[in-house]
Image (cartoon, rainbow, N blue to C red; front, side, top):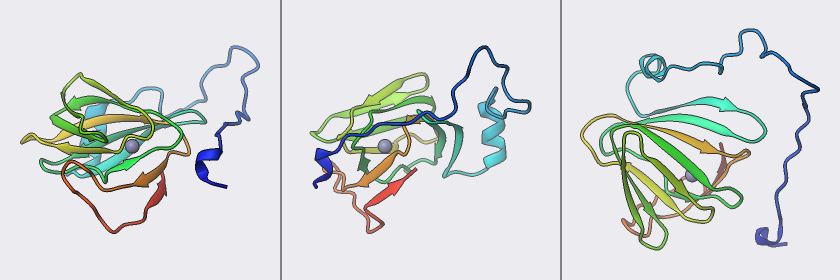
Length: 155
Ligand SMILES: [Zn+2]
């Protein structure tokens, strides 16, 4: 059966039965971006900040000229908050979005997104995706970027 004939649903196994305090030592309660940047060191890197049944939140650092492998998602729309630097999104159909600190970028499912740091300093973006976050790699039709890595990957 072609993948386009399938739908996706999620199962939430752990339900809260009422007001519940966070687990002691829960690491995601409060994250300081500056601390993560210091711990991770020189870019490129990515650090998962939050992961549960509905969301995968990842802090991603790219050096000038760096970026992602162009890809698209079948079952979720993805969005980002730019925390530092100058980033550019090239999307299927020719849309190009330039974004900088405090900007929010949203990309619908199906649109290949090629993200690059087009500035001259470190870029930081907080990416919000939905598990299992399958990535379908695809050349960037704007710049022709391609690679010979695996075609499919789950975050
Ligand atoms: Zn993506």
